Amino acid sequence: MSKFVKELMTKEISQRLDGVNDLLVVDVAGLDANSTVAVRRSFRSRNINLLVVKKTLARRACEGTSLGPAFSDIEGSAAIVWGGEDIVDLAKEIVKLHEDKKMPKFTAKGGVMDGEALSAEKLVEVSKWPNRAEQLSLLVGQILGPGRNLGALLKGPGAKLASQIKKLGEGDDE
Image (cartoon, rainbow, N blue to C red):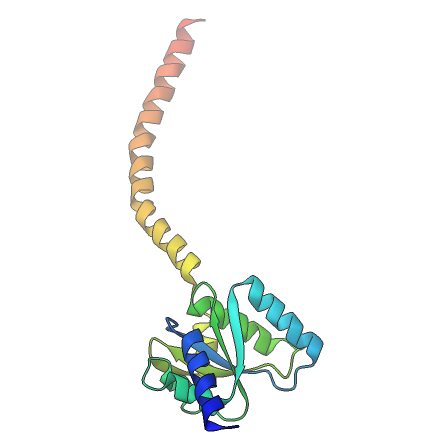
C-alpha cells in the first residue's frame, strides 16, 4: 500500500472517530459471513459502529488523542467499536457477544475509556456497572425516597383520624 493511500485511510479513520471519547477494540477475524452480518445488524439497531481497521493505521489516526491508549498493547487483527448510549452499554454488548457460544471467534481485546486504556478483563468489569438509564433510575429513587417517606408519615395520623371520625359518624346513624 502506498504512503499516499495510507495517509488517506488515516485521515478517514480520524474523521470517523472525531468527537468519540470512548471505544472498544475487538477481534472479528474468523467469523463467517452470516455471523458478521448478524453482528453488524445487531450493532446498527443499537446505534453502534463497527470498523475493521489495520492496527497501525488506527494507531496513527488516534495518536495524540484520548483514544491513543486503546492501541498500545493490541496484537493480531482488530476492529474498533464505538457508539451506543454510553461506554457501559457498549461494553455490555461486546461482552455478551464475547461470551456467546455461537460466536467463539468474536473476541473482546480492550479499549479506552476517558483516555485510560482498558484491558479485556477490565472491559468485563465495566460491563457489570449500571448503564446510564439504570444510574438515572437509581438517582431518581434516591431523590424521591425521603419525600415519599415524609408523605407517608404525614398521611398516617391523618388517615387514622379520618377513619375514627367516619366510625363515629356511622355510629350515629344506628
